[in-house]
Image (cartoon, rainbow, N blue to C red):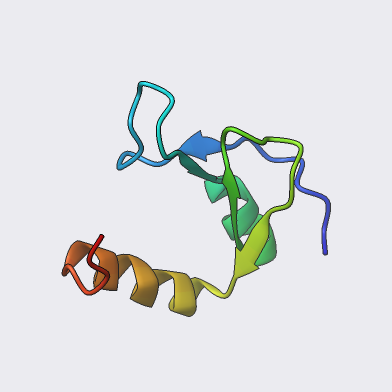
Length: 69
């Protein structure tokens, strides 16, 4: 995998009080055509990478409520 040297952005759906936080790197997507995602509470931990179409389908499903809590 390409080293993740681009800035990370916290998801707008993550809570601001240290709760469930997900980050991704939009600049990495543009440069490498993969979507890296990580837990913002463990920035040195692993990052998962997804093809853009797969990540888009997942986000669409989340917004549609396909994954109940």
